[in-house]
Length: 116
Image (cartoon, rainbow, N blue to C red):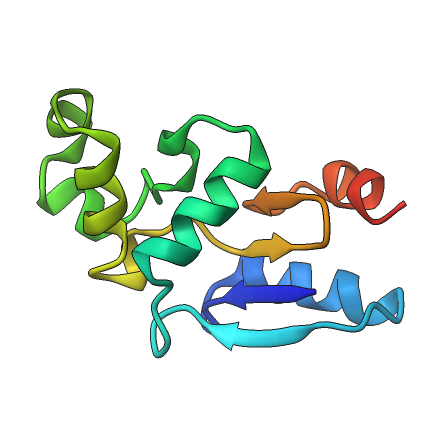
């Protein structure tokens, strides 16, 4: 599994502790230092079955500074994926990528269900 996180984020820290307590094997990747590519994001989005907006960190400073609340609805999916790939801080975190699932944000019940 791939676990994308920002180490200074308390929600990400909780998610990491959750995985560690359960002995889940994963590769951790700092989303700020190693930003996801547009191709990775496309694959995760398609696998997740979620709206693309769920991949945006809507409470983040970058999201607000760029005025994306109003701009996203006018952007194509390609433009949105390209924008997400420019800055890891725009991406909703943490992200857990498994064989047959993708979860954005940390909701313990959802992650427990996904992990079986």
